[in-house]
Amino acid sequence: MIYLELFWSFFQIGLFAIGGGYAAMPLIQAQVVDARGWLSLAQFADVMAISEMTPGPIALNAATFVGVQTAGIPGGIVATIGCIVPPCIIMTLLAYLYYRYRGLSVIQGILAGLRPAVIAMIASAALSLVILAFYGTRTLPADLTVINWRAVVLFAAALFVLRKWKVSPIWAIAGTGAAGLLLYALL
Amino acid sequence: MENKPAVYRKLFFSTLKLSAFTFGGGFVIVPLMRRRFVEELGWLEEQEMLDITALSQSSPGPIAVNASILIGYRVAGLPGALMTVLGTVLPPLVIISVISWFYQAFRDNPLVNVAMTGMLAGVAAVLCDVVITMTAKLFKQKRILPFVILAGAFVASRVFGVNIMLIIAACGLIGACDLFIRRKREKEGQK
Image (tube, rainbow over all chains, first blue to last red; front, top):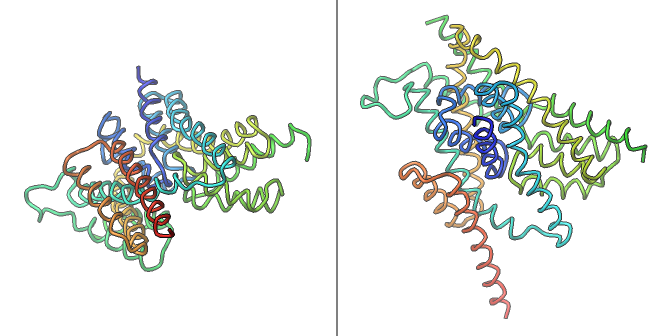
C-alpha cells in the first residue's frame, strides 16, 4: 500500500527532523533513497536543488515531490500530511509544558546533544553528494583520478563564495547551474 | 479583535503569502512572521513571539510549520491553527506538484541536465558550508563531549550503517543526561 508507506516514511522524517531544514536532509535521504529506493541519489540531489530555489520547507518540498513521483497528487498530499502530523502533536504537547513550567531545560539538554549528531549526519549527506558530484557514483571508485574536474571547480568556487561573502544558498546553487552551462558551452 | 471569520481569513492569507514568497527556510520565515503578526497586525506580544520561536526551533518538524501552528493557536485556538497550517503547507504542495509533474520532461533536456549537474556541486558546497558553520559554533562551547558525539555519530552512520533515527534518539538521551549530571554537580558545588 503505497499511500501507507509514503505516510509512514514522512511521518518518521517529521518526527526526527529537529533543528531546521538541513537536519531533515539526511533523514529524507535515509528514508527515500536508502530504505525505499523511491529516488536515486542523483534525483535526491535534484530535489534538494529545486527545494532551495523554491519557497517552502525542504521536508515539505521533498514530501510533495516524492509523493507525486510515486503516487500522483494524492501521494503528494498523503506524504505532506505524514510530515506534519508529528510536529502538530509534539508541538502542542511542548507548548503546554512550556507555558505551564516556563522553561525548556530538558529539551535544551536534548538539543545540545543532538546538534553535533545532526552535524555528523549532514556531513555524511554532504560527503555522499560530493562523491556523486565528483565521480558520478555512490561510492568512491578504485581509480580516484577519473574525477569530473568541472564539478570540482564548481564546488570549490561555490564553497569559496559561500564562506567569503555569505551569499544565500539560492544564489550559490543557481550560480553553479549557470556556471555549469557556461563551462559546458565553452569547453 | 475582529469577528471570527475575518480573523480566520487573515490568518490563512497571511501565512499563505509568507509561505509562497519566502525563500530560505525556517530561520528566514520566522522573523517575517514576527513582523506580520506582532508589528503589522498586533495580534501577538513581542515576548510571545520569542517563546514561539524558541519552541518551534526545539520541536521536530519544519520550523515554519511549527511556528505557524503556535501562532494560529494563540490567536484563534484550534481552528486558527488549522488555518495557519493550511496556509503554510499549500504553496509548497502546489509549486512542487507542478514542478514534479514536469520533472521527467525537463530532466531529459540536455541543457537542463548540464545545469542540474552543475547544481549538484552547488548543493554539495552548501551542505559543506552548513557543516563548517555549525562545527565552528561547537568550538565556542569549549567542551569535548560535543566532538565525541559528532565523531561517534559520523562513524556509527557512515562505517557501521546504524539507523539515523536510532543515532538521533541516542544522542538526545546523552544530551539530556549530560545536562542532568552538570546540574547535579553545580548544586553540589554550591554546598
